[in-house]
Amino acid sequence: MANYPKIWFLRHGQTEWNRAYRLQGQLDSPLTEQGIADAHRQAAIIGPVLAQKPDIYVSPLGRTRQTAQIALAGTACHYDDRLMEIHAGDWQGRLREDILAESGDWAQQRPSALAIYEKAVGGEGLAAFQARIRSFLDDLTGPTVVVAHGLWGQVMRAQVRGLDMKTAGHLSNDQGCVYVLENGYETLLDAPQ
View 1 (cartoon, helix red, strand yellow):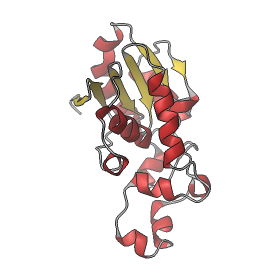
View 2 (view 1 turned 90 degrees about the vertical axis):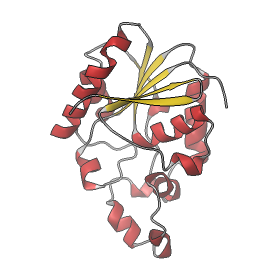
View 3 (view 1 turned 90 degrees about the horizontal axis):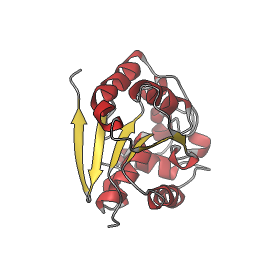
View 4 (view 1 turned 30 degrees about the vertical axis):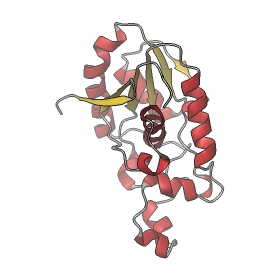
């Protein structure tokens, strides 16, 4: 387990495609009303952290930009392509239920979202995704706020905590909260709904 600086991780708020169980990958859909409320809940949590002047990095995709604008109250940030969600190849934009319906016996195993993206035809694949996330983590020099994506967060959190990738796909994947990672441990900060 590597020794990374303290990280506050925010997953973007719920999107139209999250609600429909449509694979987004590096495509985009807008935040729902719930997604906007998720970002406001994060703002209530992260405000005192921002006063500490941490580094702030945001995925350049629209749903994370929209979340960051609300949750970080317009605080200046850096956009980093390494924070984009895993690319799901030919499956981007498709409904999860349609993909599983075509997958025969594999669907009976009830794969995690990360396992589905890993298997995506023409997708980025887990090894490349993990390498991209490690590259980002290795460049951190101090306490950092990160606004990114669900699967990105699962893999990053597993990496920081020293967990294997099979476990990563089963970590919580909540919106509207902040995951705090420090010294190999994770704490979930939540605000009232």
